[in-house]
Image 1: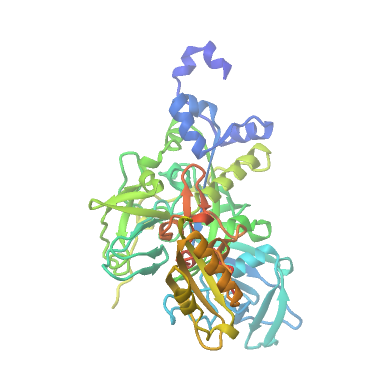
Image 2 (image 1 turned 90 degrees about the horizontal axis):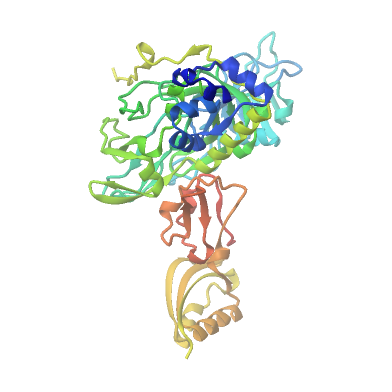
Length: 410
Length: 139
């Protein structure tokens, strides 16, 4: 860095770093790693150019319920063998339809005898998300499976107590995580309280719930997906993992001048080894009246390759605007109507204004827990146990892959 | 002259005394206003009642002693609701439903602060917590 002062000509040159160079700096213990929160201040105080030169990696994170998550488990073969057609973990059904002992346990799966919403609003005390958390904790799980019997797989059923250590593989394979932006949920109904996946919404705009970590959130810091792509190494619930595809419902929407999408847009499909996870960042959740889910913590490093990446990581809470959606009519009926926009700074302050009325806000994602995960990633990079990857392929930003379609009745 | 106070209390009636007119006796014998916020009383089962006792400090204390003598177990609200620190992830979903602002989001640390002095044990926060962190210590 001292070189710059000697040669003013370099000062004008644009910053250009490669991921290989950054990794070499990490290996030497010289990489400068900051959280996205720190990066905002650095860019403000030192300017984009100097920040781009000085900072190598920005760590971003989010933590909140992410329903499209689940565990891919290989429970191992039995003697004699069984081809599993029906499987239960602590009574929660896991998806079969794969090879003999491969299962997929979805985060929102419920026990067949769960009362659901029969006594409204249902409590949803147990389900897939909790089994996943308990597996990661190393707790014993009652496993039960049935098959129809074949010459090669004669066994018809098995009952066993298992822990994660007994499994050949336990992989968290999440089809959709880390939504870039999300709806701010309100309830326009004059009388009825709503129990939604966005929490409890009191009538007549009683409260507004939102779910994002704003300027700390990964995809707000890389809004055009310039660095986050297929093969990007990330932290999932504290374990090293990867982005393996674009998430389901990944699509493009209108953006603000600063490139921030004005509605839910990009998503990531993520994968990581459950055997290395930490339950501080992975929790089963019971959402009153809605169901069970899994809260997942995801941290993503953003390499500062040039001034643009630095500029994007300087995104501020006030730059982020999110659509306000009525969950009494517009969301359930899929009308597509947006009541207005709220910026994250106002949301985080605790009060927003809708049609002149002040409405209290509540977050569903934990900024605090996400920030801890961003710090953990920073620490891992500084300790030289986490290196960055170049995306094998970029995530789609145009064309057929980013169209969001609705299912039509015929 | 002692000063006037308003205290929230959670009354637990063991099944043996649930059929006794205890609250009625309180109203007749003491110079306190009893405001019943919530009650779950059924024959032959443990009952609970959440009340505000308003009156002179001395009189409210005498009332509490009377209730204790009659076998009512009294919990102060801070002991009626507690937060399981191992389960709370500090999201904030509870804060907007807390009518007394006992649960608040500290904007700097983005952590949830639970001011037990402000809690009236209304239990409105229970269904808002997806992590099962807010619990009743009443049995």
